[in-house]
Image 1 (cartoon, one colour):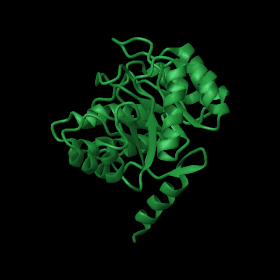
Image 2: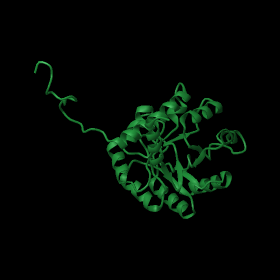
Image 3: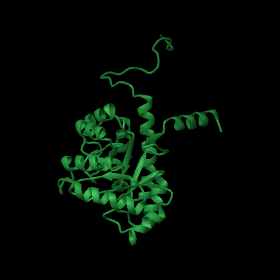
Image 4: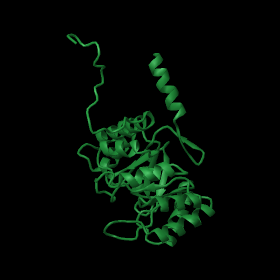
Length: 267
Protein backbone atom coordinates (compact mmCIF):
# COMPACT_ATOMS: atom_id res chain seq x y z
CA UNK A 1 0.00 0.00 0.00
CA UNK A 2 1.40 3.41 -0.98
CA UNK A 3 1.84 6.32 1.42
CA UNK A 4 -1.05 8.07 -0.37
CA UNK A 5 -3.37 5.07 0.08
CA UNK A 6 -2.36 4.76 3.75
CA UNK A 7 -3.17 8.45 4.30
CA UNK A 8 -6.59 8.05 2.67
CA UNK A 9 -7.32 4.96 4.81
CA UNK A 10 -6.35 6.83 7.97
CA UNK A 11 -8.51 9.79 6.98
CA UNK A 12 -11.51 7.52 6.31
CA UNK A 13 -11.05 5.85 9.70
CA UNK A 14 -10.99 9.25 11.38
CA UNK A 15 -14.05 10.60 9.55
CA UNK A 16 -16.64 7.97 10.42
CA UNK A 17 -20.33 8.70 10.78
CA UNK A 18 -21.67 7.50 14.14
CA UNK A 19 -25.36 7.34 15.06
CA UNK A 20 -26.52 6.03 18.43
CA UNK A 21 -23.17 4.34 18.98
CA UNK A 22 -23.18 2.60 15.59
CA UNK A 23 -20.23 3.47 13.34
CA UNK A 24 -21.08 3.56 9.64
CA UNK A 25 -18.43 3.36 6.94
CA UNK A 26 -20.73 4.80 4.26
CA UNK A 27 -22.51 8.16 4.35
CA UNK A 28 -25.00 6.99 1.74
CA UNK A 29 -28.30 5.56 2.96
CA UNK A 30 -30.37 3.85 0.26
CA UNK A 31 -34.03 2.93 -0.13
CA UNK A 32 -35.48 -0.32 -1.44
CA UNK A 33 -38.73 0.82 -3.12
CA UNK A 34 -39.62 1.18 -6.79
CA UNK A 35 -36.91 -0.89 -8.48
CA UNK A 36 -37.66 -2.87 -11.66
CA UNK A 37 -37.00 -6.11 -9.75
CA UNK A 38 -35.75 -7.40 -6.41
CA UNK A 39 -32.54 -8.64 -7.99
CA UNK A 40 -31.76 -5.20 -9.48
CA UNK A 41 -32.54 -3.63 -6.09
CA UNK A 42 -30.11 -5.95 -4.33
CA UNK A 43 -27.40 -5.34 -6.93
CA UNK A 44 -27.88 -1.57 -6.69
CA UNK A 45 -27.62 -1.67 -2.90
CA UNK A 46 -24.35 -3.59 -3.20
CA UNK A 47 -23.03 -1.12 -5.78
CA UNK A 48 -23.93 1.82 -3.54
CA UNK A 49 -21.71 0.60 -0.71
CA UNK A 50 -24.42 1.72 1.74
CA UNK A 51 -24.44 0.26 5.24
CA UNK A 52 -28.00 1.43 5.96
CA UNK A 53 -31.02 0.47 3.87
CA UNK A 54 -34.57 1.68 4.39
CA UNK A 55 -37.87 -0.10 3.86
CA UNK A 56 -41.47 0.84 4.50
CA UNK A 57 -43.12 -1.47 7.00
CA UNK A 58 -46.57 -0.51 5.71
CA UNK A 59 -45.55 -1.28 2.13
CA UNK A 60 -44.00 -4.73 2.55
CA UNK A 61 -45.36 -7.95 3.98
CA UNK A 62 -42.69 -9.54 6.15
CA UNK A 63 -44.10 -12.98 5.38
CA UNK A 64 -44.59 -12.47 1.63
CA UNK A 65 -42.79 -10.51 -1.10
CA UNK A 66 -41.27 -8.12 1.43
CA UNK A 67 -39.46 -10.88 3.29
CA UNK A 68 -37.36 -11.41 0.17
CA UNK A 69 -36.07 -7.85 0.53
CA UNK A 70 -34.69 -8.59 3.97
CA UNK A 71 -33.25 -11.94 2.94
CA UNK A 72 -31.42 -10.44 -0.04
CA UNK A 73 -29.90 -7.70 2.10
CA UNK A 74 -28.65 -9.71 5.06
CA UNK A 75 -25.77 -7.99 6.77
CA UNK A 76 -27.07 -4.48 6.11
CA UNK A 77 -28.32 -2.20 8.88
CA UNK A 78 -32.09 -1.90 8.38
CA UNK A 79 -33.84 1.39 8.96
CA UNK A 80 -37.59 0.69 8.79
CA UNK A 81 -39.74 3.72 8.12
CA UNK A 82 -43.30 4.79 8.80
CA UNK A 83 -44.03 5.92 5.23
CA UNK A 84 -47.74 6.40 4.60
CA UNK A 85 -48.60 7.35 8.17
CA UNK A 86 -50.64 10.51 8.63
CA UNK A 87 -50.97 10.63 12.43
CA UNK A 88 -48.62 10.24 15.36
CA UNK A 89 -50.66 7.26 16.55
CA UNK A 90 -50.20 5.40 13.23
CA UNK A 91 -46.47 6.16 13.19
CA UNK A 92 -46.03 4.90 16.75
CA UNK A 93 -47.91 1.67 16.03
CA UNK A 94 -45.91 1.10 12.84
CA UNK A 95 -42.63 1.67 14.70
CA UNK A 96 -43.65 -0.85 17.35
CA UNK A 97 -44.52 -3.39 14.65
CA UNK A 98 -41.13 -2.84 12.99
CA UNK A 99 -39.26 -3.34 16.26
CA UNK A 100 -41.09 -6.57 16.98
CA UNK A 101 -40.79 -7.95 13.44
CA UNK A 102 -37.22 -6.94 12.63
CA UNK A 103 -35.60 -6.79 16.04
CA UNK A 104 -34.35 -3.23 15.61
CA UNK A 105 -35.12 -0.11 17.60
CA UNK A 106 -34.04 2.18 14.75
CA UNK A 107 -36.91 3.95 13.02
CA UNK A 108 -37.23 6.61 10.38
CA UNK A 109 -40.34 8.55 11.35
CA UNK A 110 -42.50 9.98 8.57
CA UNK A 111 -45.84 11.62 9.33
CA UNK A 112 -47.30 13.12 6.17
CA UNK A 113 -49.60 16.12 6.43
CA UNK A 114 -50.40 16.74 2.76
CA UNK A 115 -50.99 14.07 0.13
CA UNK A 116 -49.96 16.24 -2.83
CA UNK A 117 -46.67 17.67 -1.56
CA UNK A 118 -45.95 14.88 0.94
CA UNK A 119 -44.87 17.56 3.38
CA UNK A 120 -44.52 16.43 6.98
CA UNK A 121 -47.16 17.26 9.57
CA UNK A 122 -44.81 18.90 12.06
CA UNK A 123 -47.14 18.75 15.07
CA UNK A 124 -47.91 15.05 14.61
CA UNK A 125 -44.25 14.36 13.86
CA UNK A 126 -43.08 16.00 17.07
CA UNK A 127 -45.63 14.03 19.09
CA UNK A 128 -44.59 10.73 17.50
CA UNK A 129 -40.89 11.42 18.00
CA UNK A 130 -41.36 12.42 21.64
CA UNK A 131 -43.21 9.17 22.38
CA UNK A 132 -40.77 6.95 20.47
CA UNK A 133 -37.66 8.48 22.06
CA UNK A 134 -39.18 7.90 25.49
CA UNK A 135 -39.92 4.31 24.45
CA UNK A 136 -36.27 3.62 23.65
CA UNK A 137 -36.25 3.98 19.88
CA UNK A 138 -33.38 5.45 17.88
CA UNK A 139 -35.45 8.06 16.06
CA UNK A 140 -34.52 9.60 12.71
CA UNK A 141 -37.33 11.95 11.63
CA UNK A 142 -38.05 13.06 8.07
CA UNK A 143 -38.83 16.76 8.34
CA UNK A 144 -39.03 19.98 6.35
CA UNK A 145 -35.90 22.08 5.83
CA UNK A 146 -36.59 24.33 8.81
CA UNK A 147 -33.67 25.05 11.16
CA UNK A 148 -35.99 25.60 14.12
CA UNK A 149 -37.85 22.31 13.65
CA UNK A 150 -34.56 20.44 13.25
CA UNK A 151 -33.29 21.98 16.48
CA UNK A 152 -36.48 21.07 18.34
CA UNK A 153 -36.31 17.47 17.11
CA UNK A 154 -32.71 17.19 18.29
CA UNK A 155 -33.75 18.61 21.66
CA UNK A 156 -36.38 15.86 21.92
CA UNK A 157 -33.61 13.28 21.72
CA UNK A 158 -33.72 12.29 18.06
CA UNK A 159 -30.48 10.59 17.01
CA UNK A 160 -30.35 12.48 13.70
CA UNK A 161 -32.58 14.75 11.64
CA UNK A 162 -33.53 14.14 8.02
CA UNK A 163 -34.58 17.42 6.36
CA UNK A 164 -35.92 17.29 2.82
CA UNK A 165 -33.74 18.51 -0.02
CA UNK A 166 -36.93 19.09 -2.01
CA UNK A 167 -40.23 17.27 -2.55
CA UNK A 168 -40.11 13.48 -2.25
CA UNK A 169 -39.39 11.84 -5.60
CA UNK A 170 -39.18 15.19 -7.40
CA UNK A 171 -35.52 15.04 -8.40
CA UNK A 172 -35.28 18.80 -7.91
CA UNK A 173 -32.13 18.54 -5.80
CA UNK A 174 -31.45 20.91 -2.91
CA UNK A 175 -34.17 23.54 -3.28
CA UNK A 176 -33.08 25.73 -0.38
CA UNK A 177 -29.31 25.52 0.09
CA UNK A 178 -29.23 28.47 2.52
CA UNK A 179 -31.59 26.71 4.92
CA UNK A 180 -29.79 23.40 4.59
CA UNK A 181 -26.40 24.99 5.25
CA UNK A 182 -27.80 26.67 8.37
CA UNK A 183 -29.30 23.40 9.60
CA UNK A 184 -25.98 21.59 9.11
CA UNK A 185 -23.93 24.37 10.72
CA UNK A 186 -26.12 24.53 13.82
CA UNK A 187 -26.93 20.84 14.15
CA UNK A 188 -26.39 19.02 17.45
CA UNK A 189 -26.95 15.67 15.71
CA UNK A 190 -26.09 14.28 12.26
CA UNK A 191 -28.05 15.81 9.37
CA UNK A 192 -29.13 13.34 6.68
CA UNK A 193 -30.57 14.97 3.57
CA UNK A 194 -33.65 13.02 2.59
CA UNK A 195 -35.86 13.46 -0.49
CA UNK A 196 -35.48 15.30 -3.76
CA UNK A 197 -32.00 14.26 -4.85
CA UNK A 198 -32.13 13.45 -8.56
CA UNK A 199 -28.58 12.80 -9.67
CA UNK A 200 -25.01 12.64 -8.43
CA UNK A 201 -24.37 16.39 -8.55
CA UNK A 202 -27.32 16.98 -6.19
CA UNK A 203 -25.75 14.62 -3.65
CA UNK A 204 -22.41 16.41 -3.96
CA UNK A 205 -24.09 19.76 -3.24
CA UNK A 206 -25.90 18.38 -0.17
CA UNK A 207 -22.65 17.00 1.22
CA UNK A 208 -20.68 20.17 0.42
CA UNK A 209 -23.22 22.13 2.46
CA UNK A 210 -22.25 20.05 5.50
CA UNK A 211 -24.70 17.14 5.53
CA UNK A 212 -23.48 14.08 7.39
CA UNK A 213 -25.16 11.75 4.89
CA UNK A 214 -27.75 11.47 2.10
CA UNK A 215 -30.69 9.10 1.85
CA UNK A 216 -31.51 8.31 -1.76
CA UNK A 217 -34.18 6.06 -3.27
CA UNK A 218 -36.07 7.28 -6.34
CA UNK A 219 -33.01 8.72 -8.12
CA UNK A 220 -31.46 5.25 -8.10
CA UNK A 221 -34.55 3.05 -8.42
CA UNK A 222 -36.02 4.95 -11.37
CA UNK A 223 -32.77 5.61 -13.24
CA UNK A 224 -32.34 3.93 -16.64
CA UNK A 225 -29.53 1.93 -15.03
CA UNK A 226 -30.11 1.75 -11.25
CA UNK A 227 -26.89 -0.11 -10.52
CA UNK A 228 -24.75 2.43 -12.36
CA UNK A 229 -26.58 5.32 -10.67
CA UNK A 230 -26.07 3.69 -7.26
CA UNK A 231 -22.36 3.56 -7.98
CA UNK A 232 -22.42 7.22 -9.05
CA UNK A 233 -24.17 8.21 -5.82
CA UNK A 234 -21.56 6.35 -3.81
CA UNK A 235 -18.77 8.39 -5.37
CA UNK A 236 -20.80 11.62 -5.19
CA UNK A 237 -21.36 11.37 -1.46
CA UNK A 238 -17.68 10.59 -0.89
CA UNK A 239 -16.57 13.50 -3.13
CA UNK A 240 -18.93 15.95 -1.48
CA UNK A 241 -17.72 14.96 1.97
CA UNK A 242 -14.07 15.39 0.96
CA UNK A 243 -14.85 18.81 -0.56
CA UNK A 244 -16.68 19.94 2.59
CA UNK A 245 -13.78 18.97 4.80
CA UNK A 246 -11.23 20.49 2.44
CA UNK A 247 -13.02 23.86 2.33
CA UNK A 248 -13.87 25.64 -0.89
CA UNK A 249 -12.14 28.81 -2.08
CA UNK A 250 -14.15 32.03 -1.73
CA UNK A 251 -16.20 33.18 -4.71
CA UNK A 252 -14.82 36.30 -6.39
CA UNK A 253 -16.23 38.62 -9.00
CA UNK A 254 -12.90 38.92 -10.80
CA UNK A 255 -10.20 36.69 -12.19
CA UNK A 256 -7.18 35.85 -10.09
CA UNK A 257 -4.23 34.11 -11.77
CA UNK A 258 -3.09 30.85 -10.24
CA UNK A 259 0.51 31.46 -11.31
CA UNK A 260 2.64 34.49 -10.37
CA UNK A 261 3.09 37.22 -12.98
CA UNK A 262 6.68 38.01 -12.03
CA UNK A 263 9.45 36.30 -13.94
CA UNK A 264 7.50 35.70 -17.15
CA UNK A 265 9.61 35.36 -20.31
CA UNK A 266 10.00 38.78 -21.91
CA UNK A 267 8.99 40.71 -18.82
